[in-house]
Image (cartoon, rainbow, N blue to C red; front, side, top):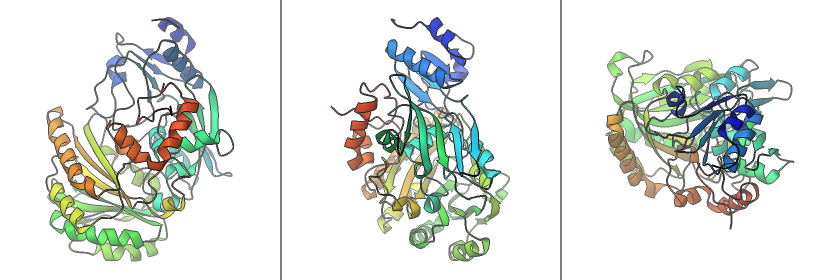
Length: 458
C-alpha cells in the first residue's frame, strides 16, 4: 500500500480507528441488518469533519473502497463493505434548534429520535419516516417518506442546506444559492456525491398528533384495502395513514388473544384538530369488524417511536419495493394472497401515501422522481433467526414478482437491496442523466460507489 500509513491516519483523527485485530472490531462492523456480514479493512469512527476529511484522503491515496455509515439502518447493508474502509459518522451527533427561524442544524450521525427529542420541545418537527432509530443521513438523501408527507412533504422538501465532504477532501455547502446542482442531486440521489456531515432543515409546527393503529382480521383485507385506496386519495392532507399486513406481536399494547394473529391495518397520523380527525376517520374505523383500534392523542415523538421495540438491531432483513400509481382489484387480490403467507412475526408489507404536499413539487425539481404516484410499497421479510434467511427472502421475492407488473416501475431507494443498474435507472427515470452529470462534476472517479450507484456521465 502506498500513500498515508495507518499509523499516520491514527495520528490525524480525534475519533477511533478500528482494525480487524482490535477487540472492538466485531461489534463495530455489525450493521442493523444482520443478513449483511462484511469485514472492512478499517473502520474510522469520526469525531468531527476533520476526521471525515482525513479518512477520505487516506482512502483515496491508498485506493481503498469506501462505505459511509450514518447513525441508523440502511436495510440494504450499504453502510459497510468487504476489505475497504468504513467512515462511521455515528459519533457526529448534535441538534441545534433555532426556534425563531424554525430551523434545525443536525449532525450527520444523528437518528430521527434524537432530532424529534430536540425539536419537540419547541412544538416543531422535521417530516421524516416512521421509526425513530432510522438515521438522518440515509433517510434524507433517499427522499424521506413518513407520517407527515401528505401534509408537509418529503424530508428533502424541508432540507435547506447540507455540508458535504467531497471525494477530493473539500468541504462544500449545498443549498439553493451555493452549489445548486449538488443541492438538487442530494435531494433523493442518495450517498453518491459525498459525505454529508450536517443538515439544515426547515421545521414544521407539529407537536401533538391524533394517531395510532386500527386492525382488521385478514379475512376482511379485500374490503379494507379497497376502502383505503378510495379514502386516502380524497382525504385532507392533514390526514395520513399507511396500510399494512402484519402479524400482531406479543407486545403489552395488544390484547393477548390477538398475539400471533395475521391482520391488516392502517396506522394513522392526523395533524389537525382531534374533533375533525375523529370525524374524518370514523367511516374507515367503523368499517367491518375491527379487532383492535388504538387511535388517540399523543406527542409526535411517541408515534415515531411506537414500533421501535419490534425492530431492534440484529434482525435478518430482506427488502423489495416499488412505487404504485393505482391499486387495482387484481392487485388487491394478489396482496391478500401473499399476505396470508406472512412467513414470520416481523415480516410485513406497507403502502405509504406519496401524494398531497409531495405532489406539489415538480418531479424535476429534486432528484426524487416519483412524485406522480400514490404509494411507496415495501415488502420485507424479517426474522431474528438466521436459519429463516432463505424463507423470508423467498417470500419477499415471490410477493414482489407477483405485484411488480402493477407498479410504476421504480422504487424508493431507501427500501432497496443491491439490485443492479437497471433498477437504479428505473428509480430515477428522466432525472438519471442529470444525476450522472452532477456525479461526473463532483465524483468523476465514482469514489462513492457503495450505494444505489449512479455512474458518472461518460
